[in-house]
Length: 367
Image 1 (cartoon, rainbow, N blue to C red):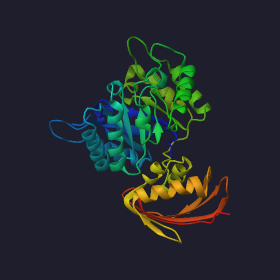
Image 2 (tube, rainbow, N blue to C red; image 1 turned 180 degrees about the horizontal axis):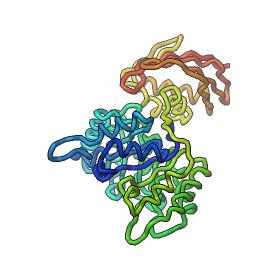
Image 3 (cartoon, helix red, strand yellow; image 1 turned 90 degrees about the vertical axis):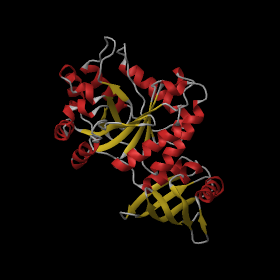
């Protein structure tokens, strides 16, 4: 899965066009923005963008207005790792109650402390279990080699996308920083599709120019990246920053969310060759059925995929070829080519429950 086009982070909704859903949506649509990421939680105790006095949640009316215009709405949370279970619980509760399209984990300096890899895995395991098949992205430092103590892998193991913060503060070498970032992220294990975030703010007397923002977009698109984001709506819509907003708005990049449906997502995970990640798409008590047997449970399904990928179709490349169905049912076809044989007649049916696979009937012949 991925996103297409231009996205903006939103930090504090009242500081975004006064919090007006109509004004926010009008500006976003006019600028050709395909997706926004709104802060929904901070740490483990703060449901963000909720009035602490009246308890009014400012997000739902903005989300509804954006969705009506075809804009994808993601949520994000700043995490610290001191109580990863509670942080994940809050994230899942907020994400599920709001009905967002995807989720971004914002992890930074707190996770550079010793021993935080275990906290990252604990948080991400609980987050993935709670969000099911909802796409998850990691937002953090732009140069992994400069931050060797940050647990990139522990986060990315359960993520679908990497959204590095390519904030070229106190510099203007836009292209060099973006290329260095992408090179280092592609070298990570696991590597994930990259959607970089550029700056539309000022800091310490430094400020990007409109031309640099445009150069950021030009290079991202030329590198074959599917989208780019910017931090943040709150700043770039102020009068003194509108040239940066307009630079993003003027750049031609197809708008519209492109979140993969389950059949494409399943085939994509199979091509990653990690049985644990594949089985993560299934409910804990899911059934996997072939003409020869039925197995129950995520662990059994993971073991079947391990056998298929190591013995049945080693080093295979799987290709999604078509699908039908909606709601809780999907029917799809696929092919595969491997070192030992190929499949030309893959023909599967999925039953979905709460964003995961509950039932999977798979038919294919290896020739």
